[in-house]
Amino acid sequence: MARVAEGLNDPGAAEVTRARQRAPMLEVAVLHPRDVAGADEGGADRLVVFADPEADPEAGGRSPEPSVVSSVCKETDVAVRVVLRLSDGFSTTGAEVTRLLGLAEDYLAVGASGLVFGFLDLDLEVDVEPCLALAGQLRGVPWTFSRAIDSSLAPERAWRQMSGLPGLDSVLSAGSPQGMGTGFDDLIRLAESDERVASLLVAGGGLRAEQVPWLVRAGVTAFHLGSSARQDGSWSKAYVDAGRVRSWRMLLDDAAGLAAGLRPA
Image 1: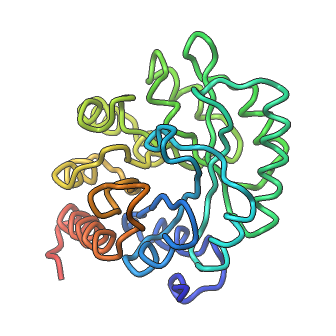
Image 2: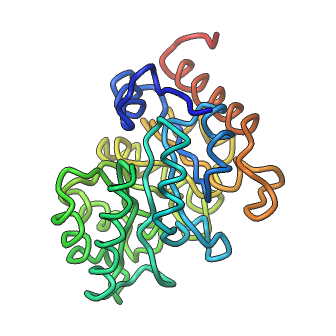
Image 3: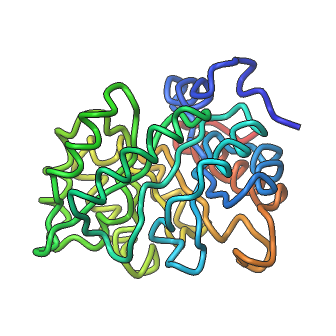
């Protein structure tokens, strides 16, 4: 059964409410509508839909069929974002951007409230032009810069390049292409040194429970679950598990309460 987010009907209401309360936002990656119940019941605030879990899912996966997005949106009342990515790597072409724009319009038409994309050029710098092309055509649509950021040559410069992109309200990052186990320290350093980084960052990509309190103390308020929301971390053999999502929900809320000087309930 679909969970009504904070008692509101707007698909994006849950993430707006949590942002106002400064409570952690929990985002869960889903592949199909059968994943929705576990994410909803566990307390997810936002879903990200993608396809082709064998194609490096922790880096963002591929664009799903619009019919899948439609089915997911019909099963939930929380915000849904959809990945825009058609090929290996994080580069793109003008022709591909045109295809992605068409997909984006289809996703929004069937209920998605936002998108996930990000591109690098051949020098592994943020490729601003295609990002602007998509964001400019999709005015008013919030979007997340994907984990392409983790493969950039100079992450600090990449964050500056992204900061002026219209519609951008979050950046999914583990601090390294190898995941949070490698990039955690750099991610903490960036968040502590720049409030804008902390406010945009959605920490995800091999996120571990013991890392959460440190990220919260650094000002991070958004977190992403991929394979860790599934039994045995399996994308192909298990759906999103409500118990696993709920344990992360409780962990995030407790960490935020402790960071604010409150005792967990």
